[in-house]
Length: 324
Image (tube, rainbow, N blue to C red; front, side, top):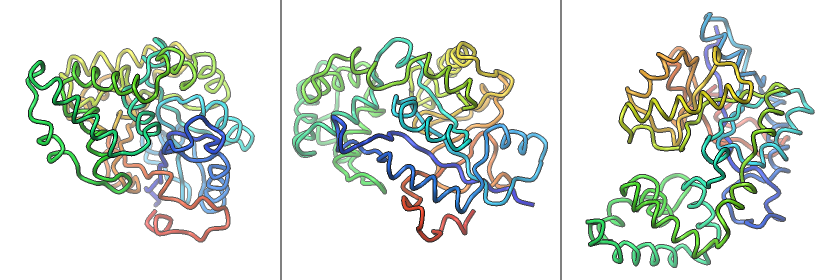
């Protein structure tokens, strides 16, 4: 009996060469098409509903099932991804951060991405961040700037230590007030675009999301503010999740069949308790692995990144194919 499903995670997908930010960490549309060709050749692309049913009724999954997930509701997903999936009769599962869409703000995580894409060198950005930490050290009772660099500057499988330092510092290390202050100052200095205008250009709008839902795409819960949920009280987590459920209802989603995608992959026991009580069917994380339903709890399903798969329709099967 097959209990393993490969869940693929996507973010930016755009015509990078002709975009305003060609250095953004994204997937070019032409390579996305090649990757979908590869996946269709070697896997069975399934719907979220099929996976929910397999979990709920212990039905067998097809051979080599793969589920496509898209985080953060970028307009790329409507303009570039949706037409490709719709033409091929493939479902994608999309997870929008509600506040960015309804209030036309830019998520701090996206501000950080575009700050990184706009600077001439990472060393220049690190120097500016260290300068700002020193500038606000007394006002916000911060540690010395070097303390944060030594603590956070640890390379991962995609980013060098300097980039990780900037991301971790501005995403989670500092308290929210000073995080927002530093991120906004850096966004103004290096990106220099009005936030409201930038948001309308970056994310899908409500009508676009409704259109995708009407045409068979799955829309799931990705929180309201896109916070690291494990950094919030249970009360604030509940509010984050409930506001996102209200949005799913607004765009015509099925609240009897909803799913969760944890922002940043961050959650804790409180998060799982909340979504269980609200009737969530399953939740995906950023843990790197094949989602074996006999091994993983349905609220802690791992995903692979687009970079874990070939972007050539004629590529040989890679290690993940045989592990799944």
